[in-house]
Structures are given as C-alpha cells and as structure tokens.
Image: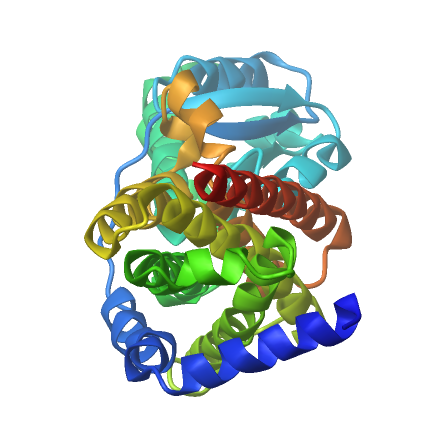
Length: 378
C-alpha cells in the first residue's frame, strides 16, 4: 500500500473513531459555548509603568516643564519624540499604550489665549482597561502640573488656567472602550488552547492505556503517519470550534471584525498546530488519562490564561516572566486575534505571530514523534 493510501485509511479510521466518541464532540462543540459566555464577563486590572509617548513639538519653558512632569511619573514609562510619525507605529504594534501631543504653538497659546488650547491624548483602545488608566494618569498629571505652575508668569492665576484648558482624549481601535470587544477575541484563544490540548491529550492517552497505540505503532505505518492521522480529525474539530466561537462573538455579542475572515481562519489554522502538538506530546509522555488531564491543565490552560496577555499586561510583568511568555503559543494567538478583530489585516504583525506559531507547532509535533518512538522501543 502506498504511503498516501495508508495515510488516507488511517485518517478515515480516526475520523470514524472520533464521531463515535461523544465526549470528544461535547468538548469540541458544546464547551466553547459555555466558556465563551463565561469569558464575556471580566474583571479590570490595574497597571503600572505603562509605556507612554510624549510628542513635544513646542520649545519653551511651559512645554519643557510639562514634559518633566510626565517623565517623573511612576505610573508612566515615557518615550519622547518630536514627530508623531515616530510613535504611531509603536502604538500600532502595542509597544506604547498612548501618547500626548504638545502642539508647536503651545507656548504662544498658553501665554495669550489659554481658552483655545487643545492637547491631543491618544490611547490604545484595544486594551480598554489600560487605555482608561493611561487616560486618567495623563489627565491627572496634567492637572496637577497646571495647578502647581506659576500662574503669574503666564499673566493669569493657575487655578483659572486649569479651568480654561480642555483636553480631549481619543481612543484608537476601540473608541467606546468596550472590554468585551477585546476580551472575547482573547477568550477564543484560551478556549481553543484548552480544547485542542485536552482533546488530543485525553483521547490519545486513552489509546496508550488500552494498548491499542502500541498495536498501531507495530504496523507498517510510520510513527509520523499515525500521529498525523490522529491530528487530522481533531484539527477539523478544532477549526469547527473556532468557527463556532467566532460566530457567537460576532452575532451574539456583536464584536466587530475589522479584518478578513481569511486572515482569521489562516491564523487559527496555524495556531491549531502547536495546540494539538502539545496534546500529542503530553499523551506520549503521560500515557494515562488522569495524568494527561493534569498536565494539559498546568501546561496548557494556566499559561494561556495567565501569560498570554488576555487579562494581564505582559509589559507589567517581571523580565523573566515576560521571557517565559514568548514560549506560550496562546500569547501569539491572542495578539493576532486582537489585531484581526480590532485593527484589521495588519500582515506585518500577523505574519510574525503566524511564523512563531508555526515554528512552535513543528517543534512540538517532532517532539511528540520522538517520544512516541522512544516509548515503542522501550
């Protein structure tokens, strides 16, 4: 039998086996509904040391003193630029969460017509909680600075200047600051990580327990062919679960999708490779359903929930933890989903996420093949 026919036959056998297993269908198609509704409600988190940009286009004592007030804040990690084009790419990439523009005529307006001064404050609405904090921090710093600024030098009392100047913040990507629009794309990543990892870890470890896996590995089919055949039906199930989650998010919770469905599906397809590969690796190591479930929970769900940026700001984490997050596949999936849902098809960002996910997926599948062969030799 040729390799292609053998692989097709194995995939057919595994697909029938999955269809006869109600627990797998329950996990893949029902659990996303339950989890998505649970994740639709979230908590807000405080942030500190947020990266923030100040674009200073004015040269003078007032603007310089205002910049110093922002730089001395412990809540903001300030980056200074003289042209907004220097900081806009950083805001798009999520390197900074907001920026304040001090216009070129700030000194003149501040001295002669303080009623007409308008400062532009832009924050990243894809992280609503962070955007709110950044906005409040910036306005608080500005008002505190304005109140303490010597008003007689400007020809008017400081308190009067504070009342006359109005700052109008603007939130990009999520103008209404609805947390659901950000949380639900992240929730899809958490749900898919758990489902994909659990599905393959539990089902394949069950075969190891029953001894049917050894029987399969002793056939002329190679270990890679057997594992690929096992991945195929769960890959389809995982993709179906992604479509279900996305449909519920769009139709029930009315989360806008500014990118294309093609980009969303392509990103999800690439993500399923490391998620399913991780489950295969767990089953090859554990070979016991109970142990496999525990390992899947510890190595799959918990890192995805805590270290993906879904709830907790990665930039606020200590450096060793930030380095650890780069190994978590869900981090790149969350980042990619938020880009597709909120910003659109920004392929320079999506391409980086997909490349990292693909590399992680290949590494995990190769490790699963190696551990399975090693187990057969033992």
